[in-house]
Image 1: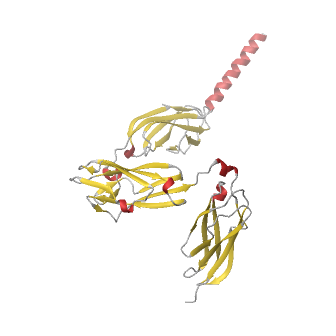
Image 2: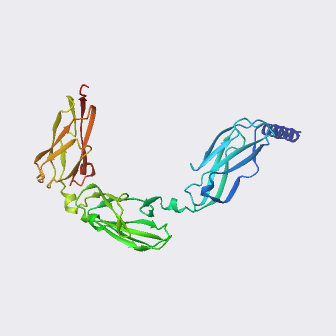
Length: 364
């Protein structure tokens, strides 16, 4: 009798459990993974709609859909999906600038019994075949080039870097190419392959940048002029730029100079337009070796800078004088001067001095 009672109790529990499960929503996708196969970058978004059926006993509400990459945008059924009805989760993959194989996941969160569910999209994006105009967007004379700005980034004053300028001859004739030597920066070395471009032929100009030959610091800019069939092209020049950094020795790092300004900003009182505002920024070398001001650069031609070119010995003080001409500079003004030093500390190697205040406009 006792065993019969236990059997009835367990049967009743199982029946109620099944009924409870039937009342919960259940999300049943037809497939969990879709392979797009091979797709092209230029074809735009690749979309696939994953469909599911609510095989449970209560409506399904999707609360959120998260993707593993910003390249994949999801959309989904926003209304509750009743038992027996179908819903969807769509994934849109952006192949632009993403050549090669991809595998991305879409995680679906809902009130379903089997939440969360992970969907997957895969495929392979083929390399876009650029047109000549896309590959060589810039025109220099009768030639086309891939860029007119060669930015070398940071270069130490004992370092050499090389960059390439790709060129293309779109004409039906041979073209002889060179770089005008009289205008070429002394810190650049040029090689051209080939020097004579056949019709529809591609070539390359290699530009080597020698930081040890740059008699300057921080941001440095120069220009190259191409000569085509003996004629220098002046309306489109090639810019070469870099930020020249000082390479410090072990001795300099061990016994560095230290520039210590009393203040790096000055707020002047209201002045009438046309008046010259003068202020001296005083500093002391609190380091262990000679301090050298490598370079100063004003944010505006209206601000002149004057200072001593002599090294500042440890313990000595000096100043940098700013002269701000307020002519044609009405209302509130802020002018800066960048100071480049031989201090190894990055915070002291480049310091910004700021001069600001209100300029009362002239009466019209």
